[in-house]
Length: 528
Image (tube, rainbow, N blue to C red; front, side, top):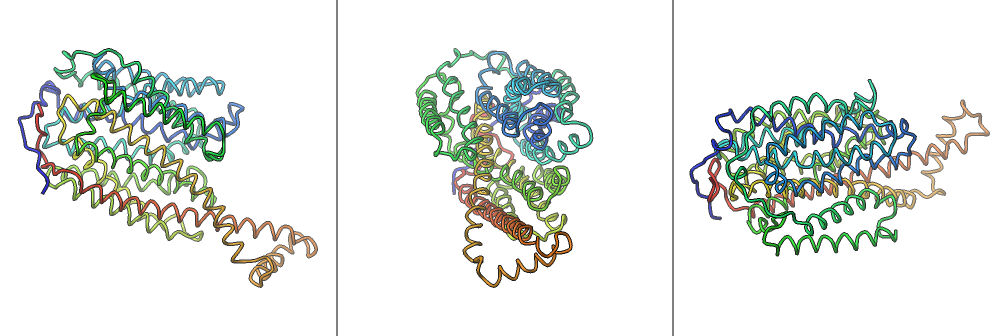
């Protein structure tokens, strides 16, 4: 049996300074929920943004990309800024920047204006997740950290699910601008609660701040920015078939290698990659990366299926997949209770197993399903996901010291976001490529000269006779059959993606058992 982390005295009261830690949890959860919600809420409004600002849909996708790029750049660097300016002050500054930028996005008169506002908004939002997570982990005693992370997971897991639904409703009912304006009251409330209830711990107040790591930060900016641009535009430009993507990939690999080499060799790097030498934290980062691929792919693929193949509106598709959020909400109290009593490895095995089985069930999808067919599986998926995020955090951070939490949280959340970006890109590419492949397979199986095709064409022409007349039904009938061919090919592409996600989930279970055992409710070695 792997070694168990031993318990040492906890000094979390130094961090909360007599404040009820649940008030701290509510304050940071508001900020986290607002930031994560914004990564998905604008996605359903892109066609409306494009039309309102006289831009193409492709140009409007930069509204998402510009946010993700600046978000990814700030994410791992958040610990240095916390030490330099004070964590409470930096957190409040980020919330204020995010809120003001949200207003600017909503009132944008041109595409260039909203892109600049989104870059600023992403920079403000990049630090919210890692700082919030670090504050929570330090504010609660080890025996209650599982419950605290369940609250944090509410924002991280539920917000991406509610985003498309809420964004679709606001866009259809009012305007796409309200998808950004909604952040303003949440941001103001978060500012008040952070100012009232959060205090900097002793080690941050008296920390010796290292010099700004110009080389590390520069390399980080290049490789994260290039990665997001390549993932966003790769399928559109045929990936490595495009010369600019080959050059961008070359610079991405070069800057990433420089970043890793410099961060590993430097005495005081901006991002402390040596934390990955901790076995639990390294395995945790790998798992959260794979988890990011799985959850973000599912969040994107299911609404696409309902919209593209079944003809649902954005709002209706969001409503159909919303039960995942309800399932996650139901699972949070359960995981909050069990995380203090059960080995995280058992909880993770259950969570990934449930997610794998439900995605395998999604692989049985047909074009004849009703809106309620997947109601229960989607609900169960949300419940199972709540058993993934919290135990991963418990196991990953369980062997780290408090002063390592800030830097570790930045790396941990970066891995999840990068996994999510890769997952979305992979899912989109697989859908496009596999739809084309299945279309060829169907055509080869049903030749135009075959009896099956001729019978279908004849039936279609007969059905269209009343609308076009007997002599004019051939072209409409062929168009109708070709459209059905495309739908069937696309259906099989969705089935392929669901089955790949199932295999990925079961692969994660193997990684789970590489964790060292962390005794539930105990502090890590050297905790203070």
